[in-house]
Image (cartoon, rainbow, N blue to C red; front, top):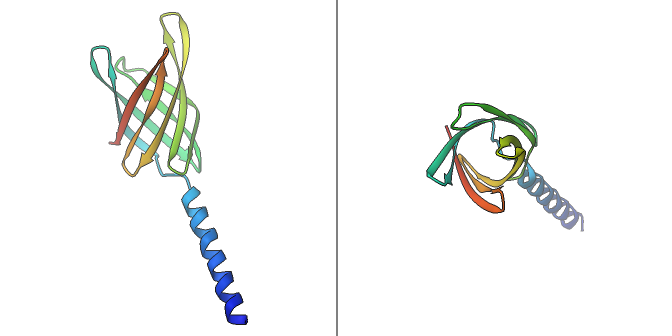
Length: 124
């Protein structure tokens, strides 16, 4: 009976460790080359991230060369979200990026007006 209890405890501990490991945030700190399709072809930006556990900070540098700070950045498991505020034709616009991390690549979407735009990123 003691052996069954020990085996059961080990199995429960193993399952707990696996679940905890699966929930650990992906490591995304560093520079990323981000690409999406624009009206006139591919648009490339530089995404620079710093990470403290699941919290993200950083900047997104677009074609105009300006660094826009990230707001509300998080990474949970392999899911990543962050927002940036940019000046649009009619004033300030908040853009929310959502995606998934797979090693040295990311992919996801953001809303541009009423259109969903796909993006990809690779670690620089």
